[in-house]
Amino acid sequence: MKFLIIIPAHNEQDNLPFTLDSLKNQRHTDFTVVVVNDGSTDQTAEVIQKYTTEDSRFETINLDKSAHQPGSKVVNAFNQGLNYKNSNDFDIICKFDADIILGDAYLSTINKAFVENPTYGLVGGLLFVEKNDTWVYEGNSNRHHVRGPMKSYRKECFQAIGGLRETLGWDNIDSILLDNLGWKEVVLPELQVKLIKVKGADYTVKPSDYYGRYFYFLGLNRFLAYISSSKEAMKSKSISFFFKIISSYEKCRSQNLELKISKAEQKIINNQRWAILKKKWLKI
Image (cartoon, rainbow, N blue to C red):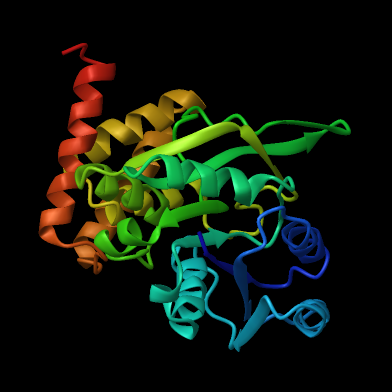
């Protein structure tokens, strides 16, 4: 199968070479990489040029710097890269980050999974981070969710869910919508992806504001948003954190900020969240 790999990159001169080298070393060689240089002010452009000059499978486009907001910035850059190529010429569409390292069998294993399982719509590995000179599992509680830095979609699935939404929560919206359409999201634990830097380290948004906005743009109704906020507050052991999240969520509601999902999709997301709540917490 043929891969279209799109990598948004902003000021990634130190990390990007590791990502691109790991792609050059893949056993599966039928791929095209589009690196989207999103207004970098360091030497990212020069790093990209080295690869595009040496290997025709690597291409690039340059954008003016977009506002650094969680979710919307990276998906906007991804979509610009997607528009640069004809996705119908490919079988698998990947959104990779510019600071990951893939094992040399990564693409071949993803390819095999898609070929042998027609219902697989989204496939990926597990993220590992470096601690005390050792690579350890990142620790995300849901080992069945493909994380944002390493998404690989079957083209038909990607098109069926309407692509990626330029909004906070995009990397959960996709999995909910594809599941509703009968596609499967699959994590292959044998695929260990090294994450060079900690996600969110350069966001300026306060955690409480982040969660409030996340629950709003995910389309959660007030009841589910409050339940989700209480769960985050319990993790932090802070009742004030709960009220700060709620305040952020209610502020978004009062401003009637635009959602990137339809009313029907919002209903799907709320129904899925409610089903999880009943199964996990209410034991229904």
